[in-house]
Image (tube, rainbow, N blue to C red; front, side):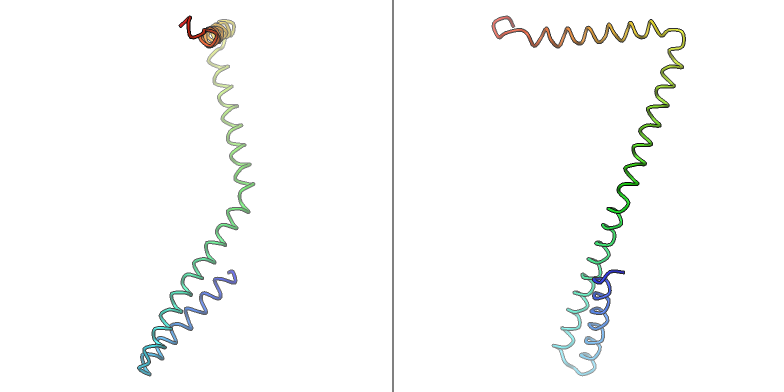
Length: 120
């Protein structure tokens, strides 16, 4: 529990007491001050909870990032295994098709970029 949570809870308790005493004593100002202190205490308590949650998230960030990297590596391993299993005896054919596709894309990209306005 953070300092803000403790202070917020104390303000809420003080406000509740002020409101009750104000009602009994028929003192509208004290009653209003009590309601205000309860509201301020609630906000301060919520602020303390949010700060604690953010601090926890920051503390957990490195472990979460490591888990994400490990999951990514696992997907790459599984994908590589699936590709190699699918290729099987057709390795040369798959590599030839991939090379042809890459060459076609390169030719298309560089051929289009090399034209001037008058050639288009």
